[in-house]
Image (cartoon, rainbow, N blue to C red; front, side):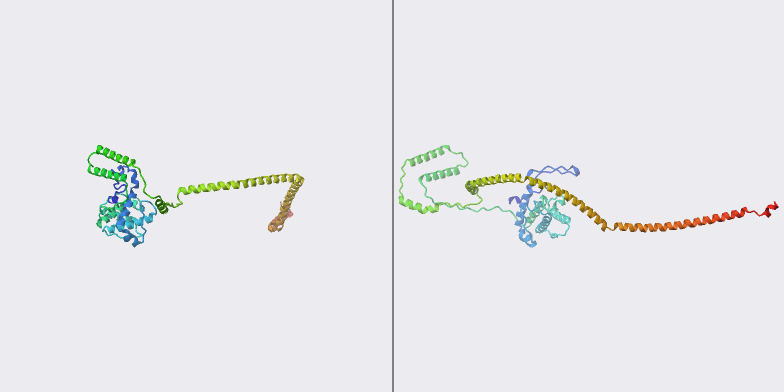
Length: 408
């Protein structure tokens, strides 16, 4: 949560790496570090914590019937349309929480106009937004997380939220009253002396002489204790009764977990032993079955050879009959084809139609020939008449009267 107090902008917005800007094509950009690609996940987690501080579940989600976004909702692409609508809704709500009037965007509003209004409000808060507005149109990415995080910070400033120091609960240490023997008491006393000396001489060096003396004293006490003979004062019957009474409480019951690998290994060993025992029993049956099957196959093979030898002449006759049958079938097919052709020619009316058409054509030609013959006869008659008239005229011209001759 402490990281949420100082928000680091995304790339192009002072992401912790110095950038040198120029004008036009002379702009030079210094490469970012390897962790810059994952910085938006950190910003998104801080944004979710800030939204919870602003109580956005009651003020925004319940009123608009929206689902709460995940911790990496705006860092990864899931549904661009839904993410853009959620971004615009959250931005408008945060601007209103920061004390600026801003209308809630609707579904059919122009996205470019909505983005420009959000960026203008962001710049009015004194925040830098030197990236193209098209980066926000996808609804996810480091620029979207940066804009929402800046607006959430402004909303927290407006409502007067301040970070307080964490208060840790005081743990009460319970002292256990356990009977201790002399050796444990001496060790505890020695530890307490060490702690007291360390607290008194924190800034000073360790005194090795004192440490040697204490260890020598402890060794001497232990050796003196070991030289004494230990004798038990407990009755054996009472000891056995106490053991019987406490024995049920000392039993440890381990709950079997199906996901434990030891149980799986035990099951594998059990299955393996079961398979081996079953294999020993079934192997004899399988061997017997194999022998019986091989014997029956040998019998079947010998019977087949005997049958083939006995029926060899019948097989040859059958093959000859099959050859004759194939020849007969071929001849039958030829006869069928001829019958089909004759039947089709008998039932087909196309030749009759052709004959009728040829007859009509002959009649037309005969009529035309008659006309031509009549014309020729007419012309011949005219020529004969003309020739006859010419002949009569010539004959009259050759008979000269005698009176005409005598005058000459």
